[in-house]
Amino acid sequence: MPEPIVVLRWVIVLAVLLGIFFYLTLKRHRSIRIVYNLLMKANLILMYPVGFVLLFLFPLWIGIWIGFEIVIAMTGRMDLVLPPFYLNLENLVDLLTPYAAGLMAIFIIALRLPAGLLKEGTKISYEKFGRLQWWGRATRSMKERWQWLPTVQGLFMPYLSEKAGRGEIRGVSPTANAGEDEYKIAHALADHFNVPVFMQASDFAEMDHRDTERKGLVDFKYIPGLDAGELPLVLDRPVHFIWDMKGYLWYNATTFNPFKKRKRTNEALEMYHSLLEDDGIILIDAAVRRTTLQVLNEIIISFVPWMFYYGEGSTFDRVASVIRRRSDLFSVQLAGEGKYRIAIIQKHTIGVARREAV
Image (cartoon, rainbow, N blue to C red; front, side, top):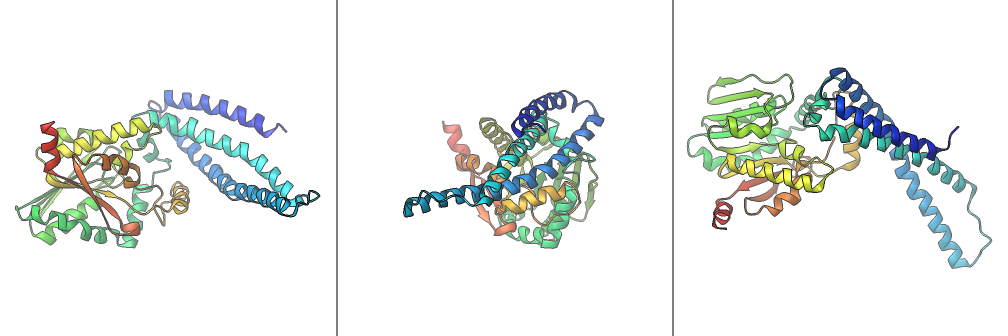
């Protein structure tokens, strides 16, 4: 049997070759995308359990060694030897580490990197057999169990009361998935303020979605296949709020390159600024991070349409540092607690005046 380090070298070579292959073929061949998605799921099954084992074993191994050295230093007894199980633990860590590194290399180099470099890369995960195939349905079902939407609506509705006093409310959601939450929000606003509500929802990924509908005070419009960056082309007037839960800002901040992340997030914020009326708001998720629960749910949602917590970090976690630097455009306030927490990013006219004066 070859040494683990030799296996690791060949795995890295294989990961590089696979990464190049997927980068060149994912965009054009659906059959390749199916293979890619299945390989991604298989890698998740192997990578996370091995990683969790190492996460527990490595500190234990280091802790025993440090404790042993402290005992020797305090007692001066150089004849002490480490217990036999420590050597077994050391051997296990030595054995697992190269395999964990190999699985991580496949995950990053062969799978995440080529999809991340492709504009259509995110879409692939939502296709049949993709790890996010059930993400939208499972997330909606989970939030319904939590009564998440009614709770969150109570947090941001006060920010729209002045707009409602002018006779109507206009909102947009550029990454709406199926548009179910947006449809409910539009009707809740109409019922609460008793004014006409225009709500436009869209998503660049193809999926079953709410149909365009005019009913009572609500004018709900869904545009399938629309890239969020094309919003300025389809909106004919500014809106009062932008609903962006795990949406356009989240995706623009999802990159391995910190400089690219800052540039793309700034561009998205500036586009949103241009789409909002004065004092309009962007609503993004800001749930408190629960790393272990998120990892577990990322694995679960890859295989079954169910989850019990978010399977990824919040939008606010990803973009907070950039947003806080854009005080010329927005102010930020957190509202709610725990899994119900959201960030309310409000456009202010002072920032516009300041930029024009420069």
